[in-house]
Image 1 (tube, rainbow, N blue to C red):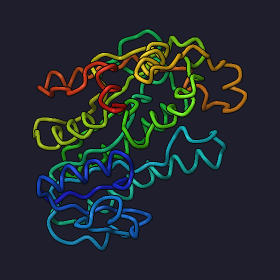
Image 2 (image 1 turned 120 degrees about the vertical axis):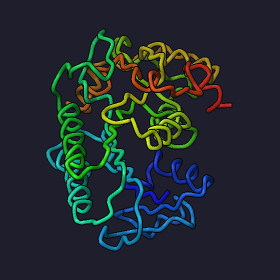
Image 3 (image 1 turned 135 degrees about the vertical axis):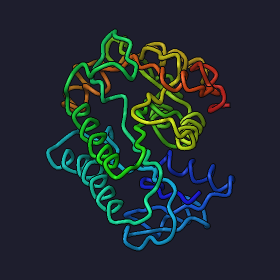
Image 4 (image 1 turned 30 degrees about the vertical axis):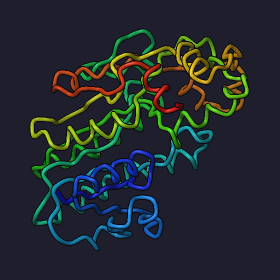
Length: 297
């Protein structure tokens, strides 16, 4: 296949490039830093700084671009960047697709389980409505809506609502390791909030699975079948590192330092991948202990 990626230099994008290059697919990455694409994604990957430079056949588009949402407080400037790097970019991508005579069969576009808002104790599958409408939820909703515009072009649209991606290098887990390795880790707030997680290998596998299944369309929760609470996650990480994990990070301190962004860490989603399981996708890592054992071995 000829595949065009946005966000190809990110954690998931780099892993997808490695996976698809091994399968013999032809890859192009649209990036703000095209000079870094070869080093990060692989020498055979074509770098694009403008969509108009792309020529030739195109079978699929994978749209994962977006500035990191939890890196810093949501100032008005940061909100604008988070919005433009997702919604404005996706709108630009769909507008470009409309100009092509030969259009891809599928657009797989990123989203997050944050689409549901803070779900509390509710179990959330893809049929569930959003529970709260905070900034993260509004961001995901607008991101999905901009991608769904491609349906009017006759393109199959798949929306991947990703949880916390666990990887050996980079991502959420790597930010937790330093304090946990020092024995200073522990739950966030009361630790009861749900944490939908997924191993990077399963994230790559499910994207490949959905891309190649013609019946797949609409939203899919990209998270392991067994979600855990934040306290359980902290205990499992402590066990994997053979360190204590009981020092809590007080909610008040988090709110003081991060403002509204703290809600992203103090809330959560008890999300389940019902549609993926019904479609026949098989997870390689169903339990958190097995995922951490593979990543930290």
